[in-house]
Length: 194
Image (cartoon, rainbow, N blue to C red; front, side):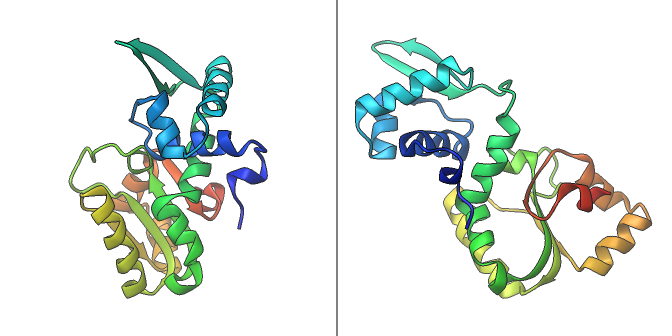
């Protein structure tokens, strides 16, 4: 399976990026990052310095601690978010259990869901699944993630035929889902909206 370490050779950098992009809204201090990544403090400091110099991380001193967080204006922010979403949490579970879940054409996380933001409207959808889905398998993965997040995940499942029909008819519900920001877990975005 594809992994972030396929393109980034520093295992410490992979762990640091995964930590930050898995918990996008969090700020971390150096010792917290060391604890979470289980790496040596000097290696973590070196990677934090590199990522800060590259413009990916921002830091601020608070008391006697330095806190770091991801800069949303970094040019590859969305790309890294997408890569990490496929390699951690529910995204990883879906990719690893793809055959058990069914024949999936597309799996799309809403941008808000991938960034761990609260849903703006109750009727908005966190995840769209398109294909032949084995609902009990999918429900098991969703329940596991809901317990981790301690919040309900609003997801929609459509067959490929239903999806194509609704898209052709310009169904308001589907257009509402597709009009927002998104992170593709399975499938190509161009095929999804094209």
